[in-house]
Image 1 (tube, rainbow over the protein chains, first blue to last red):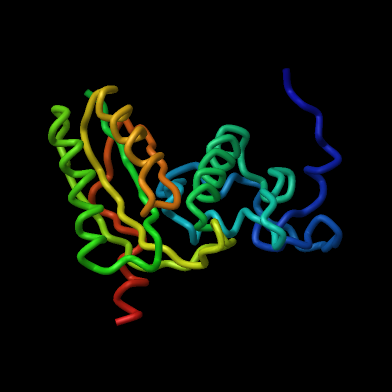
Image 2: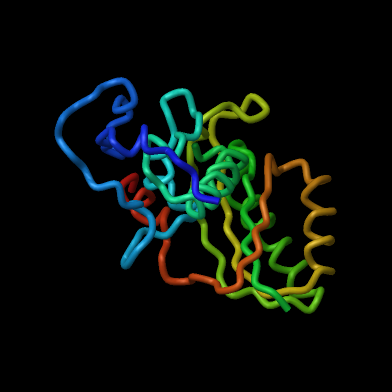
Length: 90
Length: 111
């Protein structure tokens, strides 16, 4: 079943800007998943630089609706972030 | 036989000789139980994001090895009892990536 989230798709999203939930800017950004496709970065619990981008200031995992990560990669991300948290890296 | 990665966090107040003993202990365990150590990485002293048992920093030792279920049980048994360790984590992989080292740069900067 396809989810109808047209409401969110209309809104421009910048994956790097954590405030984009609250700010409606007119500039358009790509809605493509930043973690899939060719030469995408490897999602791994050792790659803290990448994981830190998808964690909020209070150490919560960012929702994919803000970061525009695909469902499959989001599942991977959460599991890797949790592993990094066990080791005290994040 | 499967590929695994195992990471240890040893306490900060250990001397270098004690650290070497800890490292050697687990390589021996893997070797004894028909495992094969592929690579050992020392990430050095890293600071935690949050305090773990009132420690702020710890020594990280990272193993990449090929083994069976038997070794995993043995490692878990030992590291739960081990007083010099704070935490440990084992992850199973289909393919091991031995080339990229994420923590190498940070070590060189400190020196």
